[in-house]
Image (cartoon, rainbow, N blue to C red):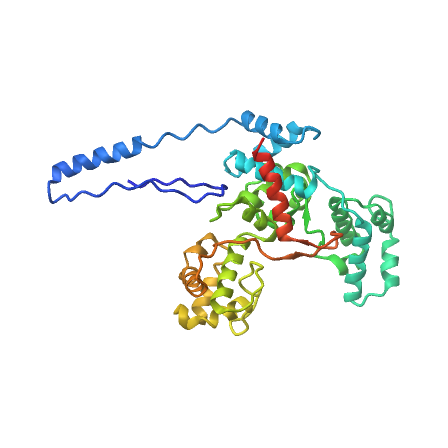
Length: 387
């Protein structure tokens, strides 16, 4: 009897108990059946029962204990995190609690709707950029911003006073709804793409709306800017998928760069070693929307190895299309690339690595990278786990 533990949302590989050696029923069928039954029972009995799951109150108390003592309404934060974990069926173990707290502290400093430095300038720059791309004269933009918005202030006055992404998103929605020029600039496109205490992507939240445990006040976009909504969807993005990782830093990198980006960057490194070339280790295995005849650089490198891999272009493309899933680890392409790379490089290669990505956003005032983000969050995580 083989036993396995599924560690949903935990950075551990499943372990397996040793299976008993099978008996030959032809030697003595009756004895074989009896002994097999005893072995199965003994094997099951040798595994200690799982400890009972902590109660919701115990989870909330543990969260409060691990939060900064100066944080206002720690009980409220703990309640929202515990509710999200329960709704998403994610184990409330210390590793997961500390992962959530570390990302929240890094992304917002425990603010449900954090202020963004220099946001009015950033927002005005986006409006001007989009207007120029559509050949809309500056005087028309100025005239549109002088129109009174739904709260009585002009859009220009509101724009000068925005401090958070929630305020800016609301302004764009109002501008799109009320002003013809706003519709030309922003219809179907709100440039505010992240929000809330964990700075989760709004598109991700909208794609995971089913199962949201609260009544929706207006839209999922607006829910993201609340503490409860931002935590729920942020936790879903951080812990709501299984990984092959043994270190949390790679999950933190994925939070910044996308699911399985660390695994994919490790694969890209192996491709580079096998092909003796240079590749961007960004976790993107396929050029978005590229037809079969125009592959991206990772796919081109793999095609140069097609003979050694025993795979043609279509087989390589079919495997890469599964690069957004855990099952990519089980693809023949994955195993063959690492075997070839380790043979040619002479050393064992890690199956994951933090992607090399420079973060680009008008909100940033200095150059940041995914490695910087993942390392900072991992430091907070380790501090939390030491409590």
